[in-house]
Amino acid sequence: MKQALIVSFMTVVAAAAAGCSFAVRDAEMYRNDTAALFETKRADIKSCYDAELKRNPRAKGDVTVSFLVLEDTGRVVDVVVDKASTTASDEIASCVVDAIDGLVLTPPDERKGKGRFTWTFEAEAGAPPPA
Image 1: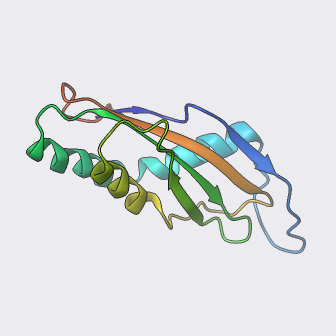
Image 2: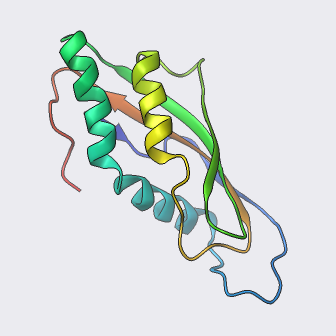
C-alpha cells in the first residue's frame, strides 16, 4: 500500500470558540496534524487492502475522501468517498471510511477543518511505506 498523503487542500473555515482551550493551526499545521492522525490508522487501512488482495490479487486503486474536523471536539465527521476520484473497490473505500470516521484531533482547533485525503493502493507494494 502506498499512501499519497493529503493530495488536495486543507482549508480552514473560521468559527469562534471563545473561552475554551483550543489550538490555533494554520493550514499547513492542520494538514500535517490531520495526516499524523490518519497515520495512527495505517494498520487498519492496510488490512482493508490486504482483505481485498485475498479476493483479487491484482487489486489496486485510489480512495479519496472528504471530511470535516469539528472545531469544538476535533472529531473527524462527515467522511464521504469521492466516487469521481476513487478507483479502488467499494469494499476498500468503505473500510477506509470506517477506519477514520470518528477519530479525534487533539487539541481541537478554534476553526473547523475541511479536508480531502487520498490513499493509493498498489498490488506490487505489499507493505506501507515507513513512517
